[in-house]
Image 1 (cartoon, rainbow, N blue to C red):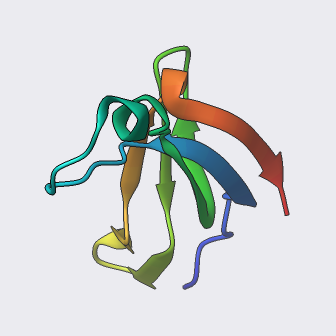
Image 2 (cartoon, rainbow, N blue to C red):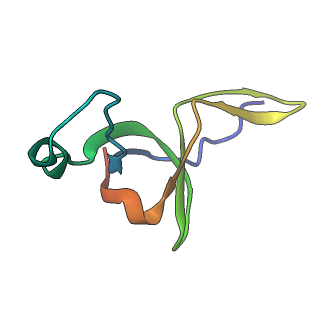
Image 3 (cartoon, rainbow, N blue to C red):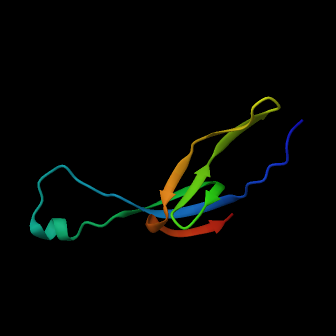
Length: 84
């Protein structure tokens, strides 16, 4: 029997590391910024330190839910999180 799905879908905007391997001047390196990335998925868990999401899942009576496309975000890198 399919269990009631308890998770809601969210959009997380977060800061990601940005880098280059080529040569650059002082002016070029000073202009570097982290990239704002967007992840959409189901909010599995959150606390003061982290937010955990998943995007795919399946369910069977023997194992319950199994999750794919999982992410754990350090709370400090999140710019915004909102229900969609």
